Every structure is written in structure tokens, then in C-alpha cells.
Amino acid sequence: MRKLLVTGGMGFIGSNFIGYLLAHYTDIHITNADALTYAGNPDNVAQWSQSDHYRFVKTDITDAEQVRYLFQGESYEAVFHFAAESHVDRSITGPEQFVRTNVLGTFHLLEAAKASGVGRFIHISTDEVYGSLGAAGYFTEDTPLQPNSPYSASKASSDLLARSYVHTYGMPILVTRCSNNYGPYQFPEKLIPTIIVRALTNQSIPVYGDGLNVRDWLYVLDHCAAIAAVWERGVEGEVYNIGGHQERMNIDIVRAVLQLLGKPESLITFVADRSGHDRRYAIDPAKTERELGWVPVETLETGLEKTVKWYVDNRVWWERIQSGSYRKGR
Image (cartoon, rainbow, N blue to C red; front, side, top):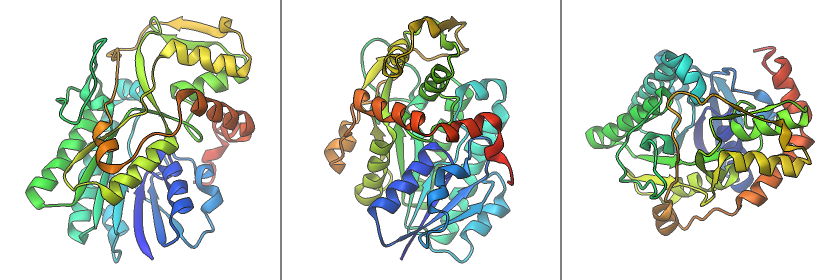
């Protein structure tokens, strides 16, 4: 049985990745390490909680002792590091926690992984570390890092830490940088689930600025497949960009979701733009596609349809978040 460690596995992408692994591999055992912050939801992994291929260990990666305990007596074939504070708005009002979790937490994991000799360490990052694009061009793996928010700066810092452990200690680390994810189990503070939930409850939908900010959208299970490909076939020490080839303006995303739900555009309310709001992100995933044989399966249209249907069919999931009951018994 191959032992794998997933950090942040109660979160959106991490929980989807656990599901992807358990659906595609029969010879693995996953340890899910999560601090159960507001964004960590046990409901996301409830269906695997009794599986012989899965266990949960509550772990705050900002605590070095807890991280050392996580590795004690274990020999992980791979570590998939998802755990991070990730909401830009929260980083603007409370940046310290982003530095603690994303920088110090990554440091603790790298130190423990180095001491235990893990097979591979997959560090999950974001295209936001590259900064903002104009109307043309794409982020490649060679684009200089120019983060513009405390969130993206903390992630860029963790990327550089990971790079240093490759070159200084020879650790088998690979870094992935993805575009905007969407899909099931995404905490309803991010754009697409916010639109869906507020539309379903007939609330106004706030849109920053003029709504013309552009993002490249990636369905979460396509992202999971790419991470698995990086694990299996990636070159240690390399960075791999993962994107969906689906650039859209934010206002177009809002309109598309409202159309799928049969809701009026009169729900849209334009609000003051947030500080440091990058105008455009667009990833070039050509290296990942060429070297690893991965391509995204979902278009934005097919992915959005699946996502909207999931939120409609799983109303209890997001209502438990709204009521706070998902946090009881922690």
C-alpha cells in the first residue's frame, strides 16, 4: 500500500483530489492533514471517512511539533501540499495569518519532509504569483513572480522556499500553478459559488468594479488529473502551469450562471473594486500538456453546468455552511 499525505484535504481542491485519488488508484492509503479552519469542511470527505484507504489527522501546519508528529514513523511516497489561506479579500484585511500558514507552514512541511525522505513533494500554488496581465499574453513557467496581494505574495514566498529546498538540499519537489478553479465543494465565498448560492436565495450578487476583470477557469477535477500527472510523470525541480483555456470576464461568468438558473440579471449589483484587483490572468499550460500528456476535459460551459447542478442538488451542504453547523464538534 503506497502511503500518501494530502495537506488541506478538508478544503475545496484538496477534498476533490482525495476523491480523485481514491477513484483512480486501488493501492494507496491517504492521510488527510487539515487544521479545520473555517474553510475546512468534514462534509467534503464524509463519504470516505470509514474507508481503509483513508485517515484524518487534525494538524495545524504552523505548529512545527504537530507537523513532526504527522511524519513520525511514516514513509510517504508523496506529499501533496494544498493547505493554504487562499481568499484574497481576507488577506487584505488580515495578512498575518496568510504569512503564518502559507510561508511558515510550508517551511515546517519542507523540514519534516526533508528529515523523513519523502518520495515526492508536490507543492500546489497559483497563477496569482505572476501578477497581472494586460490585454495580451500569457503566464508561462518562466514569467517573473510579481504578486500584488498579501495572499499571492505569501504563495510566491512559499514557491521560492520550495525552490530553495530543491537546489540546496536536493529534495524531490515539483510546483504546480493553476488558474481559477471551480466545481463541487467550493466554499461559498469565491465567485462562482457566491453567484449560485445568492441567486438560489434571490439575493443581490455583488460584482467588483466594472466586472471586466478576466480569469482563466479550470474545472477542479481537470486540475486533480493534472496534479496526478505531475506526480507520476513530472520532472523534479520543475514548475508546471495548469490552465483550462477558458478565459472569461467576471461579468460574463455571472450572466452565464444566472442563465443556467433561470434568474434575472437585475440581481447584479456593481460594488466598489477591491484593493490591488489584478485585471487579467491567463495561463499557458502548453508545457504540462506537451510533457505530461494532460489536457482539460471540461469546457467552461460543461463545467459550469455540472457545478450549478451540484449546488442545486446539494443545498444542505451549503446551508450547513451558512448556518455554521458544519463546524460543530471540532
